[in-house]
Length: 68
Picture 1: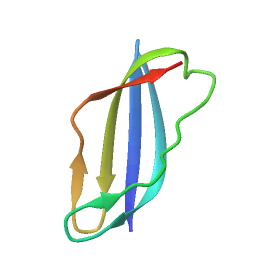
Picture 2: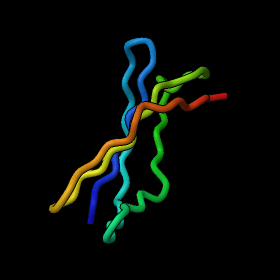
Picture 3: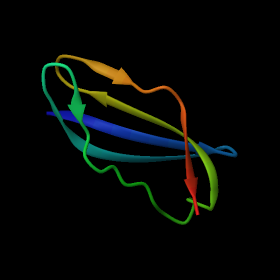
Picture 4: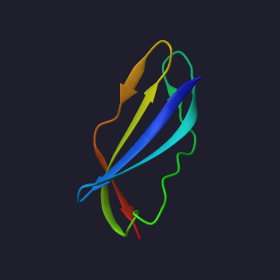
């Protein structure tokens, strides 16, 4: 199995969520990754999704997540 980690950053705050991923030959399915808590305030956050497994690791480009 793989571990998927979603990191959200905004204004010096960094939040993390993890889920188990299911790797196959060319992709890893991370399913749902939840990040929450009082520090998750409305606005636009930078987001990076990464995964690690026994055989490989990868990371997305930086994207944006809008919290209503």
